[in-house]
Image (tube, rainbow, N blue to C red; front, side):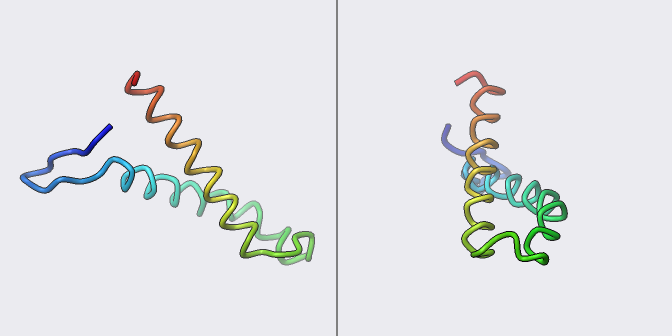
Length: 69
């Protein structure tokens, strides 16, 4: 995929994907925070990082499908 050139500054596509995944993670965490508060999740930190990685993989797949690479 490479990078985008914005006025001479190269921005990696993966950075854009990571930012989009973080924004989606913040929206999804609104739904998952009650699970953490009620104690349904044993390791909240591990749960959150795994959820973010899953969302990042989904965003990456969306970029690949959208640009047809």
